[in-house]
Amino acid sequence: MTDSTKTKSALFPGSFDPITYGHLDLLERAAKLFDKIIVTVAVNNRKSSVFSGEERVDLIKECIRHKSWHSQIEVEQFSGLLIDFARTKNVKVLVRGVRQISDFEYEFRMALTNRRLAPEIDTVFLMPDEQLTFISASIVKEIAYWGGDLTSFVPDNIADALISKFSDQQEKES
Ligand code: PNS
Image 1 (cartoon, protein in one colour):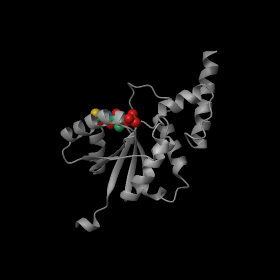
Image 2: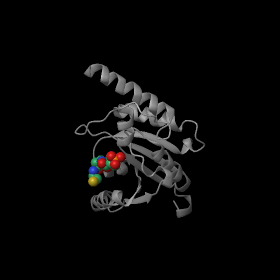
Image 3: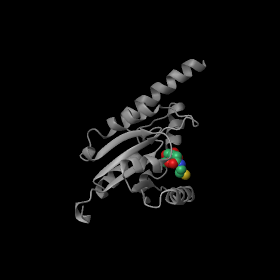
Image 4: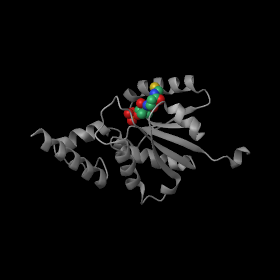
């Protein structure tokens, strides 16, 4: 395969618990740079999450169903080391978002760790639209828990899923 015929693929890994407008903005940017992107939902049983891996995968698929670039995207869950998953998919690029300088230290450490473990794999950093840089899945969960307005943070299907999760949880707690 010559360079010009190579398919440019990338993994876009994260917890996505849940996916936000920030992630979707990054995914759209990545879709302009790569032919194929595997959104890789990390499932870590040592970390608690609001949504199961399967739920996160389904929610992401629902969010991108109507996007013009959806055919470039695959969504999969994985458990284990990211570089092992990348190797099974034969992908050499990881895409991560950096929202602000405070993200950078953690991202830098993770990228170098991954490169030490798998020198053939590199990490590419993308910045989201500056209007979205303050959005994080944890902030979204906090707003949802206290019944705040989620419209500018996540698409409707995610807001609905969060509301239903937290109302179940509050019912159990009461
Ligand atoms: O959305 P997040 O929580 O910032 O994503 C972090 C994630 C899932 C990409 C990272 O924790 C990860 O790659 N986990 C898989 C385990 C792994 O490969 N760790 C080594 C890299 S330090």
